[in-house]
Amino acid sequence: MVQAYILIQTEVGKASTVAEVIGKIPGVVLAEDVTGPYDVIVRAQAETVDALGRLVVAKVQQVEGITRTLTCPVVHL
Picture (tube, rainbow, N blue to C red):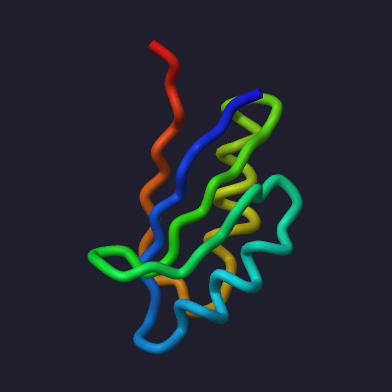
């Protein structure tokens, strides 16, 4: 299982709606609106790195109101 945090910037006033919509996507463990340089932080998981990439590009980035994403895979050192 591959896990990642996805840091999301949204249009002004859209963070809550974006977090709610993303939270319903299969593979998303948690989606919360936050303050700071990013508006939403998502914890997601998939079986492979390729599947995680498809989740981010095909599902998460298609949510209306998102302006930028940064995907940070979880590593265990």
